[in-house]
Image (cartoon, rainbow over all chains, first blue to last red; front, top):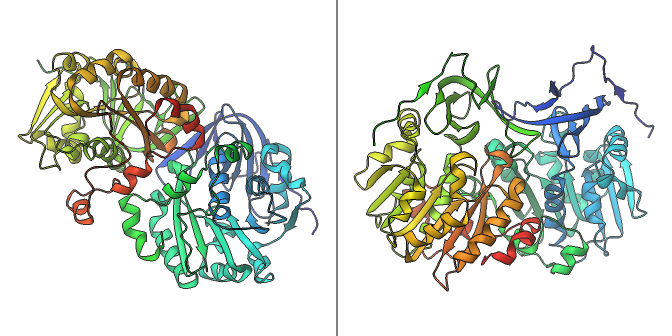
Length: 309
Length: 309
């Protein structure tokens, strides 16, 4: 596929960016959480423009390293990206006895792939990212996440994940959907049709994990989502973890499997302290794994009818 | 003690408030987290002024109910205050077999007292708040938290908590320090001298819990604090929980006791579903209690030498 050419609109006043920049601050204003905004002070704008798919801002922050913003929403920040990348990767990976072939839908920053390559058993990782411009910008500005994409075990497929999984039945041990929130193109990664195809692309004993939004703003949407998933997968789980610089500071992770007796709260793979050190894990450990499925009452009461955790 | 008279500075341009208000947004800008700020949209300013002790802002937000701000820092927001109030109260209360007499240092909003009064065994609650103006403003603008302060089991002491605990040796089953972060007067609630007096005011089998800051911004300070506490109390614990509208979305809770065999992670009092419903608990449950002591590696590695959890 030919390389998309981004339109860099730095200093071009004709462009109306979806990212709100005022004085030297980025303001994350979004309909998903009206009346609330996380603001990050900007040191330098590295890219502000559009690809064929989305509005993209990359900036160096004063205190938190480089920041990737898509359609006005923070996607990752160097300072705290470890918390999200580790959870969305190691929750499903620690539940699989021998994950060899893994698919990542989205995740063009490379953070999930970096975590996957920490497993010796992993032989092949396919990254299916729709937007070449995101890959190029991350390669340039987020090397601590993206440099792993040069690893020989990694294949990059530029294209639509929704179409990709339809064409690869029963192929993957683990599938991780590392997507933005369900707006614009990413909406297609949060519905029954997608989860049906996801099940089809997993091996019989496969495990999938998807970005699960934050219950503090999206509880009715999440409830509807897990209800739909429960019609498709015999086992559905929902965990949460800290994501300090994302809106509301907490993000959810959806787990799916067709293994009838799987207990998502009990990792098969338990990491010793030397494992944690070797893998440079700053957030995830085996106790965090189990604890992450424990939900506050206000979420548990809404979701428990559809969950196996 | 005579009632302090606040200076209400609404519309008085001579006053330089510590709270940053721009257009119709409150911006929580603070040296504790430079380069980052949570912003809340304002519907109406209810009070903006000073007491003898601090700068106070109360506003009605567009989406999250009323908000209390002290010295420019959000103290509580009606929408999510339950998460903090429930954790700082029920963590120590569920660990005590029969808490009858409880002291709250700070907590003038009444949220902790509201949670304490849910226990039939509680006979007396003393609230020791330094600032009458905070009490008056909360009574007016945060009735869902403060109305409980009229309960006959509650005694309000307007004064300095540091001095109060020195004069009440071995008197309390549970002591909760519900303070702002350690700036200005609240600094006195985060040092060895205070923790020594705290131990003195607790009965032999008493349990104390203090606001424990957020490890995402204050880890070196917290490390120093738990190290000091460990010199004083035989048992020290550190839990965390979601606080979506506070900076970084996660807050810590420090637990202290002289009971030699206490396991902070195992509540003596386990709440059934009907207990949770009767007590209207939206966050805390017995599984959350245990899970809240599980820390991400980056915090565990720094704190575990001084912790019994």
